Length: 297
Image 1 (cartoon, rainbow, N blue to C red):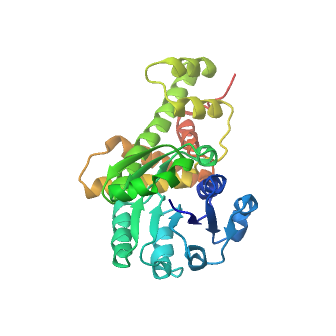
Image 2: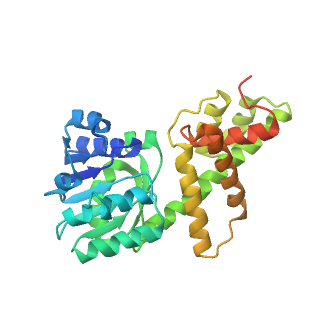
């Protein structure tokens, strides 16, 4: 089992995952462009590196969770030159949400250096990252997935092997399509209920017990009626994912008419200045169209 882990990227998700690896007893070295973001993980016992090259030196597994494709490409191929710092025999696990083509590009480049690679994006947000209850979808060689599984277990409620490299990234986009659809549907439903004069708490009570219930309806619905848009997964990142989904669907000539409409709602909400708020802030764009606000009575 791997003993030394380098974790690169100390955003909301990376901090939670790295902290759980420290708690699980691994020797963890972390790096972030802005060093202060790593303070809480270092306080738990992780080492802080000044560069990715320093972080990955001697590591059995290198993991990262970055904001988007450009950040991943910059880390691997750009000024930070992670690719040049790696040695044959090391393992890389990319936990970012990126286009499958980016994962395939990484896999090919790493293989040329004798480095094995998994794409392993995660479902869940700030709370699940902190509690070690993410849902991880993995693409790459099955034997490598099984080798790395003990490292993924402290981070996750479940892990799912999806197939060859790129399949984990593909599954993440499929799942995020559903997440965006549920948020949009919740907004439409709660606005309609408000216009109909229904008590929003009563509406959520029904949604909690029906055969179409969803944890997203429970969590986001309760926050919505309290007007709480605290950031667990930023709306600007949901827009990034919606754009990736649109590109991926176009690549495969796969119809996504409903998702195309939802993407426009997300754009409108980001253009209103709500990109740093929780993804549920897309509902505020629907509220503006409706001329009502969903809130507790």
